[in-house]
Length: 383
Image (cartoon, rainbow, N blue to C red; front, side, top):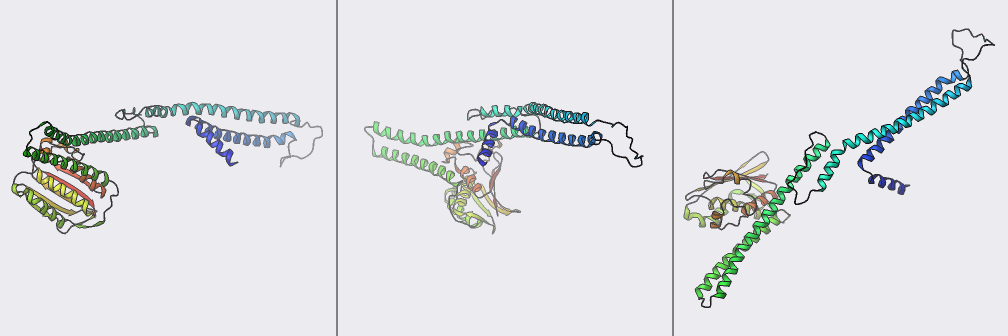
């Protein structure tokens, strides 16, 4: 029995949605039609029986039997009428069920036409056509919502693929440049038969700088890849004031010559998280505030408690970032100014790493900046 039921279910799955709806509707119509037919036959039978076998005495009327009276209806014709009524009722029930099933099939086909068109359109989508969109159905039913939802998914996938392509191309370029420098230095030494010790030392310094840059890029990529996962590390309480004091102590020797002034207004506010990762994230933000600042500029760090979060701000009064770059600065290898980034020896991964670390701690990071008016980063972390 279970095997037969499984086979029937399997056969139903092989049918199209239109046929499944039609067959289920036909079953409902058949049950309703036969039920109505049975009720009609039963009522007709109850009404015909008194005429088939003679009328019973009606209260209040004379009960004297008239011997020669003829019965109102003969039993034999009444039986034929009853049988004819039963057959016609069943026949009309079947006919109306068939007609209703056909009508349901046609109507269902028209109603499911957008679904078939959607299915054909979806089957043609691949990685090369993610920018294409399905034609919008101008109705607010389930099909229209499904189409709009699918188009939104395509937009997200298209954006993700574009980011991945930009990331891959940028990573290849970042790795290729120092490798080309190393290769060129080695080739020069091979070609120069009269190379001096100074030439070798100069090439050694150049190769070392290129290797350091390669190492920096690889470490950044590894950190981005592992930060989104459970990279381990103990969750602990971190007081912001001593953490930013440590960052300031580490950066001051590099930027005191241009007169950068640090201001720490975090008070006694505390956050929870991976101390190593959060130190790395805030170090990057403060270092950027120093790198892209003016001489004698200010770097201001502050924190305040919100309703259910801690808001940390890192603000400078340096070069600033124009509005068209705001949405892109957190992408890997993206540079607002390539020449300036090269000059400051940036890998283009700093803000990507910061964003990955903040998001791992269920936080968000945004920025507010205008060209030549400084930049302020807002890090929002849950309490």
